[in-house]
Amino acid sequence: MSRSSRNHRSSWSRLLLGTFSVILIIGGIYSGYIFYLTVRDFVAYAQLSPLPNVNWPPIPGQERQSNISTGGEPLPDWQKKERVNVLLLGIDQREGEYGPWRTDTMIVLTIDPENNTAGMLSIPRDLWVPIPGYSQNRINTAHYTGELKKYPGGGPALAIKTVQHNLGIPIHYYVRINFSGFVKAIDTIGGVDIYVEKEIYDPLYPDNAYGYDPLYIPAGLHHMDGELALKYARTRHSGSDFDRLRCQQQVIMAVRDKVLRLDLLPQLLPKLPELLKTVGDAVQTDLQPDELLNLAQVAGQIDDEHIKTAVIDNSMTVPTTTPNGAQVLIPIPDEVRAVVDEIFTTPAQAKEEIKDRDKLAAEGAKIIVHNGTTVGNLAAQTSAFLKEQGLQIVEFGNAERFDYPTTIIVDYTGKEYTVQYLARLLNISESNIQPFTGSHSEIDIRLIIGADFQLPTAP
Image (cartoon, rainbow, N blue to C red; front, top):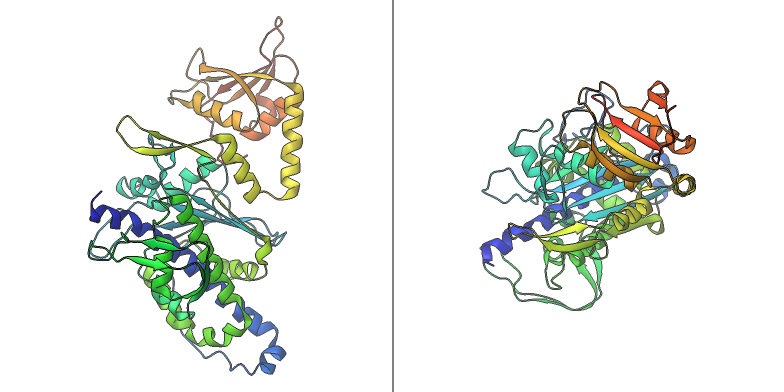
């Protein structure tokens, strides 16, 4: 592999790390400011000076015109404390280069205000998945394709659609960043403390001139400035992208810990204008100022022990080589679903899903899926989705004609719970559930896909 290729491929980690650092730094500072305003007596006791009058630099992004997200999902109701999911994208942008860019990896950040919990799930760049509206490819190409093909909403929108389609979770907001603001942001908060579990020696660590800058970090606790934190997150010393994703999560938590510490707030508040200007040059988001403030308020109240982290790693994927010679990771659906459920569902939701699956298994309904439209491969995609929800699909293919205007459920044997679950899952009205009155059938349910059908992105 050439030096240029190594340096190019590793630059995504700068971007991804910068994304998380920026959003958590913003969250921590805003949380501190709210805390400052609401506990003035304590602030006075600590002899904090008043926050100076400042001009708040805007964060570039897209002004929203409705309550629908960039990915087409209803936005969470902050008053009802609904779960919030944010997709963080690190674009592979380097100085002097022009897009479009791959993301190479993504992390989904989730916050549950009702239960004061949070989580982050790292997605490896080589995950081989269907890109909605396009063919299967590495997940890191979704953003690139969206920009190149001028997809509505651009690269972020197609990246969101891809994550929603493959993980079965709604994405409400996105943050996209290049790496230019990272080092300055970390240095602004005075660096971070990182415990390095194993000695790191990377003689092939790339520099910025397509050469090498050997890296050595002994095991133990280290105070890292922006440059060293970047190197820690970028190094390939272990040879595993999965390990590197875990290192990034470690740095993220260190940033959060540093920013949310009370004794840091007096130092950070006067630096807020400088930090936001740094952010403004590096980040794009569809989070509006009030939403960012709400996010910060919630994030600041969550204890570390209530934050779950996970990586879609080698236990959930199978490495393979495509016919074109690309080395990719095939997701194992059941394993990926398990970690998604762990990070993105509350105990009550998980309990309800288990109950659903138990009842579905008890009925054991046999379902066939027929495509009554001209949209290709729709029966196969729908069958795969329904299997992930615990339904038993025994056959799929084309219907006897392709002009069905609406989607229909034909109930052959009265498996009522499965019929209603299927209707609820696919948003099929009661009027489109038809009982079968003919002779005995070996099939319990037939789903005929019509022109009104939309494949859900989440159960």
